[in-house]
Image 1 (tube, rainbow, N blue to C red):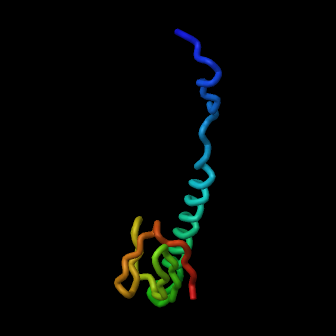
Image 2: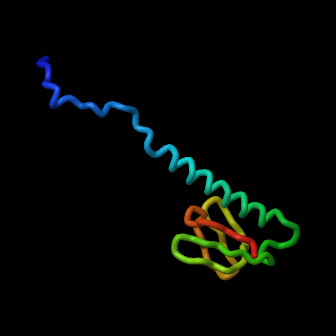
Image 3: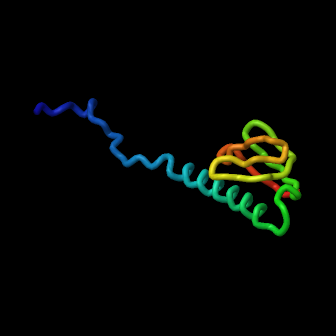
Length: 92
């Protein structure tokens, strides 16, 4: 095989690690949000009596939670909110 001149050799042969930190931060934020939602549902009484502020990518909801599953949260106002879209949830 013919050897290529230095001009054509690829000098960027490092391992690619550029998205590990960003992915770790997103997973950590998602786990924090799931913990906050679970703490609301594990309190004494009914969760729909607890007012919350849910901030998502599109808008902010001032409502109460009714139920949840792995992917969505259902509010008392019949809004279905994806858990992956939730940025923060705050008890009022």
